Image (cartoon, rainbow, N blue to C red; front, side, top):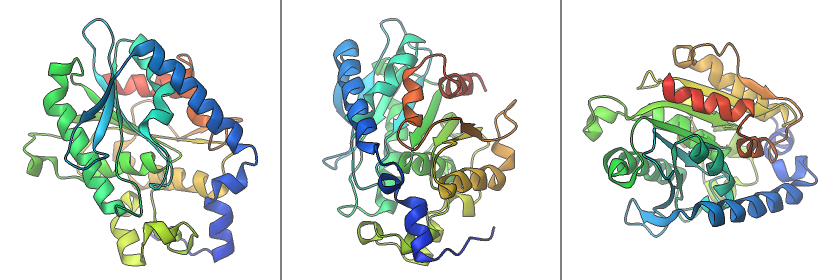
Length: 284
């Protein structure tokens, strides 16, 4: 698949979400407020360790009854900021529907390169697949993430899970929300001071430029009011992996009236199309 060559100023306009959404701090503050409420209400098991690095932990939200399955959610923040606690508001709708939610943390750039973060997420998936049932976080497992977490979600499809000791991939579905799936434009992005990508490394970490190793469905969603580059990145991934399109989903979700920061708040609504599409993946 051909990558697109953008001028540096176009890259900056396309990927600098804080510049594109002037009231982004309003939405980030809303995340924190709703996440505090979610943690107080659900009382998750905090900082469950899935690996040896300091940030290789997850927060586990479980229903009172035996869970029907588990959503593993990967936070965003350009691989260089934010925390699993900032996204706790994602959990209540799924817990109320009877599912466990594992909210994953990882080491941030530049302390860790993106390739290491991918490996940490692989370890988190492996941990939940093996240890989750004993913690009321059983299969089936769906992986989802926002922004950088969307990229990391798609990267879980490129892993050879048989080499990890699984007869088949441990995930039954995934959803990338506002993900970046071709990293090559980011070589020119100002944040690359932390990513430390060159073209070869960016290509090697771009799921849209790779072949999937699992046939599980991958849903794609983006806010309709996001930058043209984030919309393009979502459509690019849809075109790249046609065999992984969920049944009944005929196009990526372009969520009307939503930008990069408020689109993820649709997960705080049990009736939203985003929540319903993610729940549908458990039965795919």
